[in-house]
Length: 211
Image 1 (cartoon, one colour):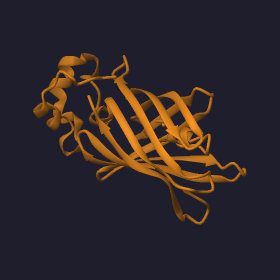
Image 2 (cartoon, one colour):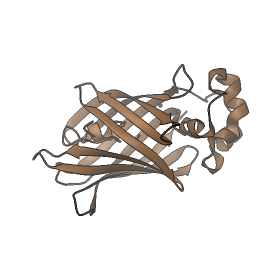
Image 3 (cartoon, helix red, strand yellow):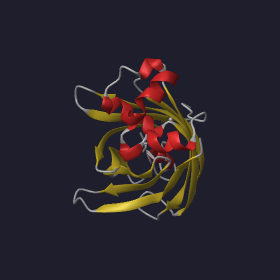
């Protein structure tokens, strides 16, 4: 939703940064000015000519598909895990290396994370379903934990929704929110909710793109 924060929290609890069930297309050759324009106004299509030149296979995708290009690059994440029904609190750090898939329609993410319960790593794919008009996230951790989330864009935020099961066996709703703050940074928050729709924050922090 973004990394397997749900898988993150899947050990001490699951998390898509993103559940139980969470980008190396580098723009390193782009100038600072080009980078700042790439995801300007949260519209990756504004950089269509640059991206099409480097990745011609993606030039025929829709504007909705191209919004996934925001996640392309190497990201560093840092935040705090809150004590919750999923487990104890503590610090969280992670990295994501995200690249465009060969089909030009999805983004592949290789992630590594450290949280209170230990370390984890895995792989995920971000995509867009043009028929249902929703984004998708499918991830698998090194331990075999899987995560499947659906995503939507609301204002300046990506919201990834899924369901998870707590260590006690309770099924809860989960959502991973990524609030875009610049072309190279976003704030993230992972929340869970029981049947009464009261949301509890389990993880929050910031992510920055280095290249």
